[in-house]
Length: 125
Image (cartoon, rainbow, N blue to C red; front, side, top):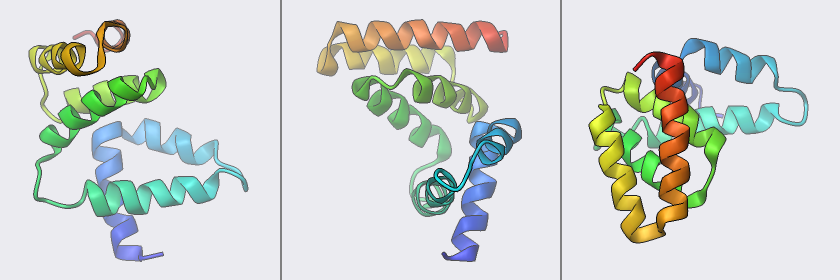
């Protein structure tokens, strides 16, 4: 493990997903799941999200599109929260899901709209 990349990943993961989210993920980790928590922190958050070529806001919008297409509602909800923390607006999130309609179909987009509305309500947005 690269400690510097891991530390950068942990910092970005906390900024995007929140301290509470990250603390819960690690608190719930056990011998089986701890290695994947470490890997996602170091690689996904430290290496990929830590690459400054794209701003965090852009990465959030890309993630929303990809996660919508993959139909992963739990991940989508977390990344909608992260997108809002990264400065994305409801209008920008809506525009992403409208584009999902064209390239992935109505079912994927409609589920994404439903999940995002839950997050907006929970967050008072």
